[in-house]
Length: 197
Image (tube, rainbow, N blue to C red; front, side, top):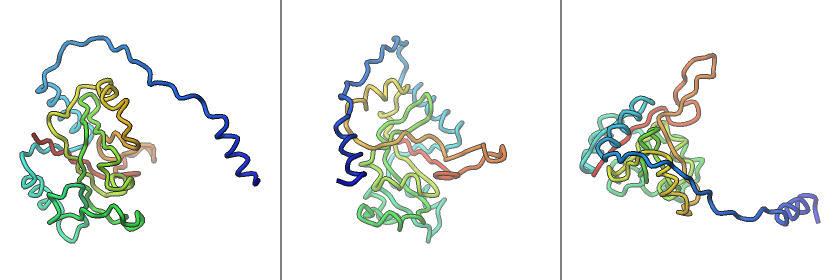
């Protein structure tokens, strides 16, 4: 048995027992209206550098995209409704061939008002690399899926077994390079959120 196999065998033999997720005792807050949650979400997204568009259908989403991204910009989407302006069948494409994506349009499962983040499970990413390698990211979230805080997100997602996923908030940015704010340092340079429903 090789050294590598000995190490892997020892690791497998010494796995900790699986434990249930901890219960969070969150103090009851006063009820917040759906309208207040939406306003807080929109304010937070804009504050952290994102853009918000309220839409009723995919024609309106298409209109915004076409105004902002001129062909031959490479656009990919998880929505078949956008197949006339975007590639929608890239699940089996080699991830290394996705490096030139200008815009990715993906579905978010949740939007969190307290921090402006959106939960995107792997099933909505087409490929894991898409929301991180694209130059610009657009996330589409249903108005009814906006929630107040991360405690609620934990309650919704805690036992869902969706596997990989990410909370995405605002464009990628860092300010630790010579104390200058740099957008797109390790992810998309912009985030657009479409709220519908």
